[in-house]
Image 1: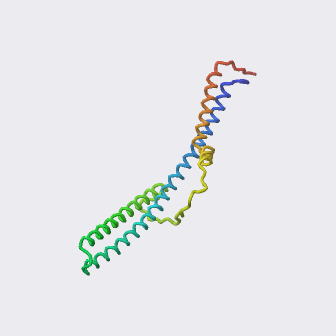
Image 2: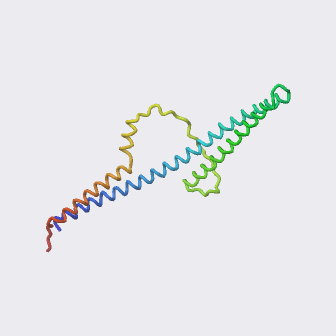
Image 3: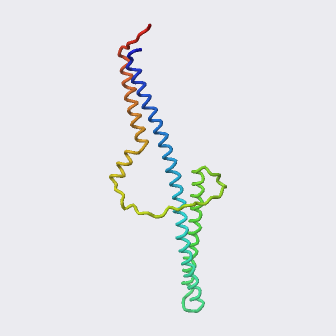
Length: 180
């Protein structure tokens, strides 16, 4: 065939479909990176939470020791000692819950990166706190629109659909062919 507009439109549509598939693969890789990064940051946050709760446990232990000493000296009623003991036990329960959350999130991280669940590992780096003062919302939205592979893949799929529609309408047109 010398001129076959339908075949040409189908060829261009398949090129757009191929580009959309490549962009979908890139989007899947970005999603994996996002999932692993989120799991990593959750483990870091849990470790920081454990440190904070441990400091509260230590503080309530000191308060309990003071309340016990004051009660034994006869300067404070038993009720103050009981309150301090309840506060200390509450903080200990919070510490247990924080440790359990850390262990669960560590297992989730191991699953996300493909480690065997029984393998022990520790995080080598913790992300330091950094303020996001220089963040401009309009620039962030424009950057996201320009760099998101899923949006680009959808644009390519729309372009492929338009070309496929054109190919379907071009099937009514005559083709020019040469044999010889």
